Image 1: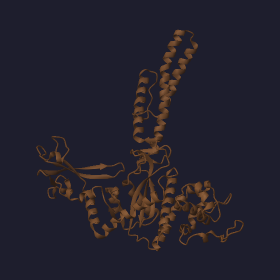
Image 2: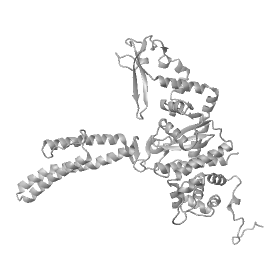
Image 3: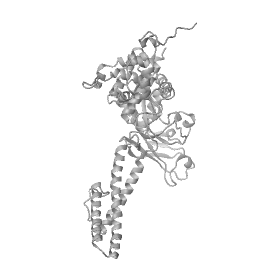
Image 4: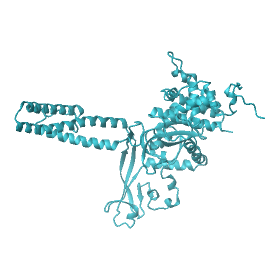
Length: 522
């Protein structure tokens, strides 16, 4: 005897919801999207033309696809036809992959994703999954959907441009000296503009045309040979000038596209070349990618942003500004690793935001070691006399204050230093261990008093029981999210190109990690 099996009979129930498990992830997706205010979907409404699919339904099926490690629009389309979970969320509709992809890159998708994260955080607060005491910030580099050999380097462009300017100026001077070209009233003394190069090209064309007319009018073979030889040089000059005109325009566009970055990819112009940890070529090759920053609590991603610069140091301030402007009010404690420890970051968090910065700096761990604390050649261990404002070196010499100095970095942040000089380093038995200054020069110290005060503040803050316990959570809070994103979800490379589209894609992937963790809770 077999169980009843008949392909010609309708099987009940017809409602796919009844086929889903009680705590299926589809219900979490459904409730999250339904909690988003209706105003967020208004920009997707079209008053004319064929009625479009409801944006709630489109967002649900895309989020569902990402939670199942499906990042392709074609595979999402297939799921709407054979996945019970997807068929219930789509309520029988089967949007094409083109429709899914167009919705995923819609300009208003970014605002919709922000509403997803806001509503998800509200639910976590209601269910007491997070306590809002701190946020944990970290970043990771994800490879862009771009060819790794289509690089443009800023330094190379600047070198080529400088070489071209030098050669064009030399040619211009030569043409003026040989009276082939009249002197031009140049806009800039150091380089010829594109219009001025065109003027040079026009003059050379006139010279060539003049030789051509003489060549056509002459019947003497010897004279014609001389004219052709004389015409050859201005033709070569003209070819070179036209090449410079094209290259000058290209260099300007390259530098304009890069902005403050050091490189970009021709395939995805918003991607910057970075050194990735997961180097499958095993040769340290730079690859185009984006720096993804996230803020988490209890391993839930509460906010995110994408940046083109590979270092984390310069992303903290804009990221915190973005969180406050678009997501939520910052909690009391801002926690991050040593990659974010810098003077401007401490100044912004502590002085501007009035928050506690639980952020170490590069030498924090090393400065706690006994070997470092007992090293007599570390300037932080030198005896300091506040009355005379001088240090005492290991040889007993006084290192006295000389003058103040300031340094301004590329971002415009100015650091203030006090410069100290040792009174006499000649004949010092510790010279090789103490300084790398040339023989005859005395040891100099550049002390940033503001930075030293910040370091002491961080050391005191992290030594407290409460704040120290919060900081120790960092490794088990934010870093597992990246492991889940890359290893479990399988999101290791972007599928879309352009910063706005990449921001949408990583937002969907991070929300998918949230939903999977939320659905698996006890």
